[in-house]
Amino acid sequence: MSQFHRVGLVANPRKSGAVALLEKLMSRFEAYGIEISLEQHTATLLERRDGSPVADLADKVGGIVVLGGDGTILWVIRQLGKSLCPIAAINTGTLGFLTCATEEESDRLVEALASGALKMTERLMLEGTLERSAVRLLGFPWSPALLERS
Image 1 (cartoon, rainbow, N blue to C red):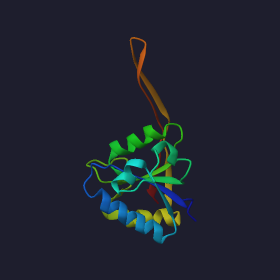
Image 2 (cartoon, one colour):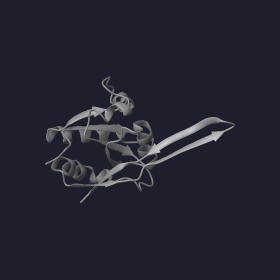
Image 3 (tube, rainbow, N blue to C red):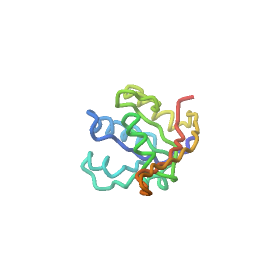
Image 4 (spheres, helix red, strand yellow):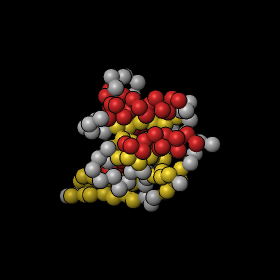
C-alpha cells in the first residue's frame, strides 16, 4: 500500500515540455486517487493560483515529484531545509544522476508511487557554511531521501 495519498509536484519552468508532462502526471495521479499539491511556480506554469512555496509542501504531502535535473532537485532540497520528505525525480535535464526516472518512464513511476513499489534510499545530512569577513554568505542542509524503483 502506498504512503502517497497526496504528492507535491515541482517543475523546472525552463524545461521544454514541462506543462505537457505536468498535465500528464496530474491526470495519472488522479486516476489512482492520489491528490496533488503544486509548488507556486509550478502552479503558475499551469495558469493556476493554488500553489504553495516548496517549504510548505513537506507538511502537506507524502512525497514530492520533481520534474527537472539534478540542479532542480538540489534547489528543492535547499528550499525544504530541515523539513525534508521523500523525493522522486523525473529527469528533464541533461545529467540526472539524482533522478529515478526519465520522461518516458513517468507512467511507471506514477504506478510505483501508487502501489508502494519503491525503495527509499536515505542520504547523509551535510551542512555547510561559507563565511567571509565574519559575514555568513551561504548555508545549506542536504539530506534527500530519494526514491527508486525496486
